[in-house]
Length: 149
Image (cartoon, rainbow, N blue to C red; front, side, top):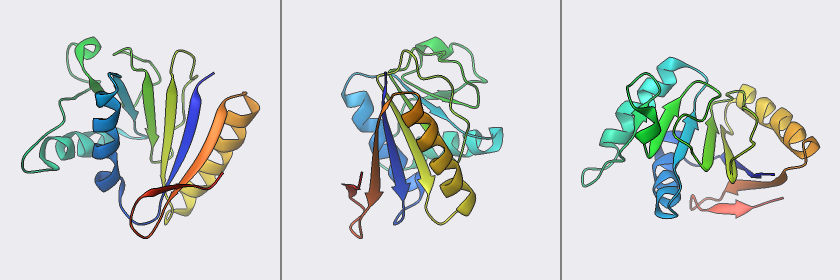
């Protein structure tokens, strides 16, 4: 069973929070998949990860580009694990795939978007029912993650 974390964004946007989490995942030696709900969102994150910081970028590709198996970070709209990721980020209310083979899955949702909050609640119930170890984290005023459940 995968360890499943729910990250409730209350103080920053996904674009602000995701790059640091991706860097930490790569620092652990994990390949990463980021699943979005739409191709437009995938493409926007693709552009953002090349330019999010002046002194750095995150090497990555999208599932529409060649050689997905070679990518340390793969942005996808699909359910497959084309790059052999150990951790999967599920964002913007995307429907998660089966989590077999992953060490960790992270659901990130915008606390100001009612639809994303409702989807996260449904995913929480489904992940618990499937037997995954589930934890809930919320941003504090300083944007640090605080474990709430």
